[in-house]
Length: 302
Image (cartoon, rainbow, N blue to C red; front, side, top):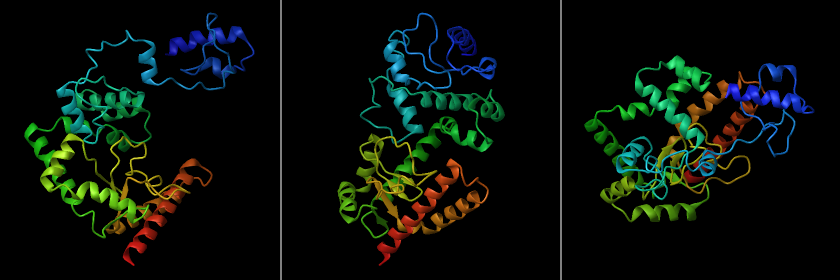
């Protein structure tokens, strides 16, 4: 990419009128617009950053790049994938389908493989991933440990997860859980679960028919991949600055102590973060979401 960027810089400099600085010439962007003589696109200023194409767009434009037989999901592929991410969408990830690739997925797969290889140390991986802290790198590639588990231990571990999920789901009709959208929304989720006994629930979890995972504020019933997660942040779970909350969320009112500890950690971060930064504003949004959580808990306890 460095070689291509340097060659493209030569073309951009000859074209002129693109606002290229001496610093740009010495250290060009790895990705820029095409300035080659044969390029037919509009040539914007060099400082304007292009939007990268998605991995799927690249594969669609280059159908001969990968062998379809090599990227078709097999039973073993699906078994390993569900070990790492039990909540995979069964409509997308199924035997015989083509793997849906994404750039971030490729990055994470590389991190997991490097950690599991035993040939790349943590500091080297941190440098490759451009992470600020070592802890972030270890968290990012944590799935490699799941693949390294003894098969018998792995089966017991996953079975226990399913059993714990089923046990928790059988109590969602009680006052412990509340939907930020009200009792009507909670009832629709409860009706989906309450018809199944524990054994049936475990089978449904394994087949991906029922999705339920514990998050910071309660349980998430979103069967699709969520960009917000609900673990590192609860802002979107509780509706952000204006929304009422996520329809797939059931708040757990017994997690007050955990939320209070999280609140204290936010205060500690706010004390050292620059007040005019995106991180500061994100932390403030988390604080407002915690206030919403406590308001729901108080309403539930009346």
